[in-house]
Length: 355
Ligand SMILES: *Cc1c(COP(=O)(O)O)cnc(C)c1O
Image (cartoon, rainbow, N blue to C red):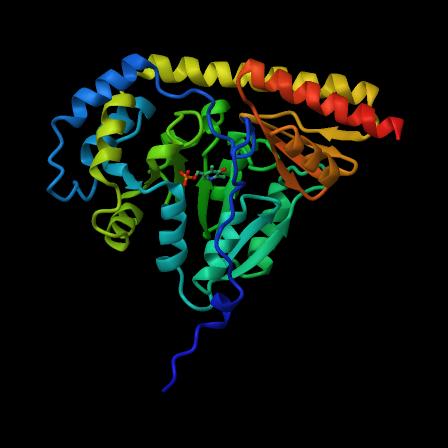
C-alpha cells in the first residue's frame, strides 16, 4: 500500500520564530539577564567533570533534587524535560485515547493546541470573559456539558499576562474529575502557585520552565510536578535520555543560588511594572492604545489600533515584539531596552497622528 502523510501533517509548517539580527528582542518573554562571569566560572568548572561519552541520567535526579530544594517540593514528584514544550508534547502524544477531548482557552499559549492537533487529539476551545479573565463556573460547566477529559492552561497566562488566583484554580481542580494541566511558566513573577499541593490531587500536573524567570531558555529545561502515578507515567512515556548532560550540569550548578534567582525575578517584576506604567503614560496621550492588562508576568499585553503597522514600524527600528491580532505583547527588557522601546513607540504613534 502506498504511504500517505496523515491529513493533519499535510498542512503543517515548521515553527517560525522571528529571525534576523534585531537589536532589541522583546518578543519571546526571555529574561534579559545572561549568566554573570561568576556563574560562568562555576559552570566551566563543572563542565570539566562531565562524562561526555556516557548517556545522561535518564531522570536527571540531581537536577530534580536541586529544583525540589529551590521550590519546596519532593524530588520524587518531578519529571525533567527538554523544555516544558517537550513535556506538553509527551502529554499530548501519550496521555489521551481516541474520544478524549482536551480543552484549551482562547486565548492561551498556542503550543497546547498545536501539540494536541499534531497527535490527533481532539481539542475544544473554551472562551474567556470579555476582559480576558477565566470564569471558573463557566469553565466547570463547559467541562461537564462537553464531556471534556482534560484542560490545559497557563497561569499566569501567556499572552494575556493575567493571573487566576490560587483559590480559583483550586476550585477548578476540585470541581472536576478531568485532568488539569496547569502551566506555571510565569508563576515565578507572581505568588499564587499550587506547587505545594501538586501531589495532593489525582487530576493535576503542574508544568514549570527554566526559560523565563530562571533565565536559561538556551539550555532547554522544563519540569512537570505531579502525583506518583502520573509521574511514573510521564517517566515511562518520555524518551530515556531527553535531558542532555550539558543541560543537567548547568542546572545542577545554577539552580543552587536561590537568592540570586529571587533577586533576578524581583528585578524583572519591577521592570515589567515600569514598562506597564510607561505604556499607560503613552495611552493618556495617544488614543490608539486601548486596554493595557495589568501584568502578573514579565511582559505587557495591550490593545492598540493598527497593531500590525506598529509592529512593523518597531521592526524597522530593530525592535521585536509579538503581534497578536489587535494586541501587542512586549517582554520586559533591560531598563535601557525598555526605554528605547517606549521612545520608539511614542515616535511611531506621533508620526501616525501627524499623517
Ligand atoms: C515560554 C513558555 C513555556 C516554556 O517553554 P520551554 O519549552 O520550557 O522553553 C511554557 N509555557 C508557556 C505558557 C510559555 O509561555
